[in-house]
Length: 203
Image 1 (cartoon, rainbow, N blue to C red):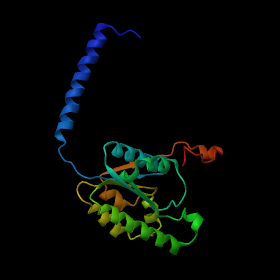
Image 2: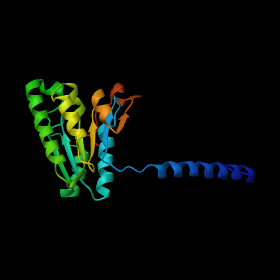
Image 3: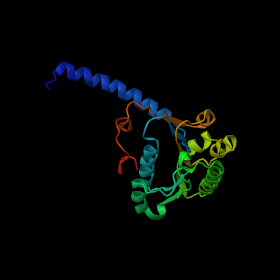
Image 4: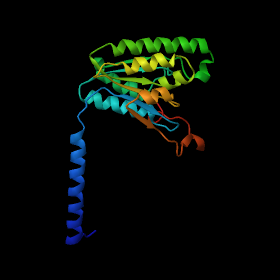
């Protein structure tokens, strides 16, 4: 593709203006704080995005904590891979499986309560900079935990602690308290075409 001199000059001028605007916007941002991040929505990728953030944090030498509220002892590729980081990551799968598998609300509530106690324990550990509360939104959706208490606890996190909450159907109160909310939108899913869950893609 050939670009003539006049077009190249127009492009350069346009990008110079854009860079000035971008640089000014970046310079105006002065707050540094621990974020409450919510990954929600019906699309695939909520936990996957959280685990990607974990990898980024580990690359900066942070200690990271994971509490899984629904998933139990299911062996996943991300856990196997992240185990290589040793003491830099602490992982707790506290759930007993999906709600349609346990079919026991009292048992699910007890598991969620144990998981939230573990989450609070990790929040109190000042060596941990990032915590992922995987599928906490599911526990809140089914009223396994008191919503007001959970939101207040997350909002009261120390200033340098980042927390990511994943799962469908995030409660409006949690969304209101969050700093960053991303909704994964379902456009197309291979399950609808009969493709089963596959290692390396779903787990």
